[in-house]
Image 1 (cartoon, helix red, strand yellow):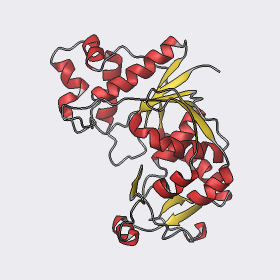
Image 2 (image 1 turned 90 degrees about the vertical axis):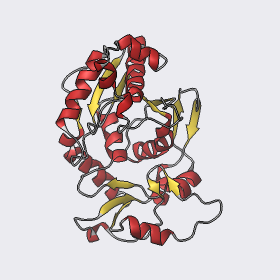
Image 3 (image 1 turned 45 degrees about the vertical axis):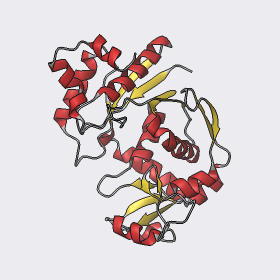
Image 4 (image 1 turned 120 degrees about the horizontal axis):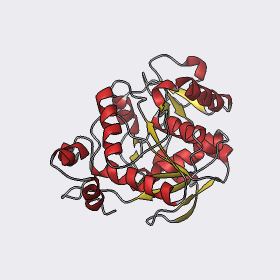
Length: 281
């Protein structure tokens, strides 16, 4: 199997040092393996995506010395493909429409129970209010959710391999964790035609990604992605979750943290090697 990995930013703000670390690491690993590094633009949220940020992404990554094949995949052009995947899950009886908003979910969640997690990788864990609604009842304003319990029963004993130092080794899907600490994830968000989880799984498969390199903050989401890969009969890549670049207070960098934007360091005269040194590469 040829080595293929990707860096998949969203054009919703400036790339910062954390992005630089992830992109350079993925590129270096692909180079070392004689493989291919791909750039993918995750612009499924058109309400926040901006062409100027996309242009800046290309400019910053090229300045860092990275290159990739063209054309670049953009999620905004792939809605029909995501609908195909959703239809597969619907045919398996695993999807349902949900009209709950954030306040509804907060109210339905009730008082916290000791030892039961309240929040998962997608925020507050959905209490299942709409779980018995049929897809024929779906309205334009609904989100579409995955019935996690039924999905786990159908998926069986799926697993994945992790090469990052923090979680190194084989991992099996944990049914109890997925039902209690993740819950019924959203497959299609309002006004977007898809969601991160559904899109990234389909995109990785269609681009023949063999190795996924990303931050440890997404490790919990990997169980979701492997579950979807299994349900959709898609291959499971090897995963490498790397440490995060943090600010002086130990907090994970965010796009609003313009003080550590690559463009700012460039404007101040930093070199690509300076950036590699800053992030420990």
